[in-house]
Amino acid sequence: MLDRIEYQFYVLVMNIFSSLYLFTFYWGTLLSFLSGLFLPVMYFDKPERDDLDTWFRRLIIAAGVLLFIFGTLSNFSIPALINWAKALHGAPLVNLHYSLSEWLLIPLFGAGVFTHWWGRRHLSGKINQLKIKHTKRTEVARDERTDVRNVRDYLPETVDYDPEDHIDLKKGVFVGLDVHREPQYLPLADIQKQHMDILGTTGAGKGVASGLILYQLIQAGEGVFVLDPKNDEWAPHLLKAACEKAGKPFHLIDLNSSLPQLNLLAGATPEQIEELLVAGFSFAEKGDIADFYRIDDRKAARQSPQEATEEERETFTGLFKSAHVQGMKETVKAFYGKMEELSEVNSVNAPDGLNMQSILNEGGCCYIIGSLRNAKIIMTQKMILIRLFQLAEMRDRINSTPKPSPFSWMN
Image 1 (tube, rainbow, N blue to C red):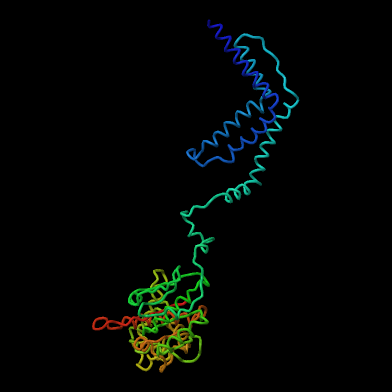
Image 2: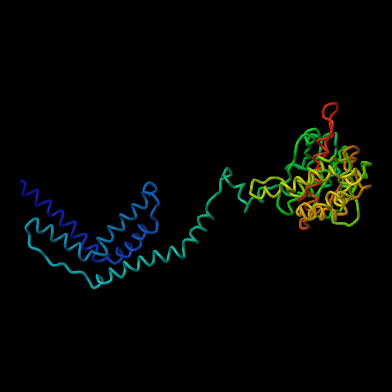
């Protein structure tokens, strides 16, 4: 009984191996080529971690290995399997032969590997384009509105309109139209209590937005200071028109001009002048070893306004010509050199020039044109900013409600 079962099993195995022999005899070249196509996946698509491997990659590798054994090596593997089965059963061994195409199995395997490599080099881009072309984007895709390459597609269409048609301070400060082209307003009281940053790239409309807001604040009776180091082409004309419409004064100060225009030290105390000099000359401590050498400079900035007369404290030029400062020419050279540079900025050394306090009291606009390159003008711009802080801090916030004064740095 067992011999009969063993014989039937032997017949079944031989039938399978015979069918495999005939199949590889006629199709071995194709199997070898496909093996060369599949096996390079082991190298090119290897994941960084084993847990990232996919079942599809493993299936392709398994198919490639089987095709390599029973295709590329079929003229060795198939006869060996048949003779192994015959040896187990005790049957005589046979010599199996393949056609001349067996000599092409190895070259065809190499051709498959080359075809795989060539396809990755030349067809991957086209396949990706085809995938993108036939992929439907979801409307709830993430990280789309933050991609600078297509963020413009999500912005509303820009429309031309006249802001004058929508300005109404009773409703608030007009800041533009929404996506439905309806006017948007911010409460005036909120703007008076908060800071505002207008950010954007070149040409995005920062100047237009700031000009629109400042135009309305001037009409609301606010005192507006604008420090423009780039010398905007249109902003001075816009703000001047706002002042004329509101009946408020407009002052245009050009720091690059040699004409005396602004009295920066009007009403300043010796302590406030010291603060201006230390900030403008960058004598404050910075936490480095050079702080030791700035001690004498800060001392000179403190003593100079204290030792000067009231008349000498009216301008930086008078302060520079004072006997105390002139006596530092050889002892405190850094401070003396900075004072000499500042005294040459005639635009802010006008005893009878504009007092910035008047803008805070009466309203209107003081438009200051500065510079981004001239070191003396940059130093003066720092002092103007500090002086505005000082004037704002001097307002009576106990017995009255201080009047806010918008300040804009256009950059």
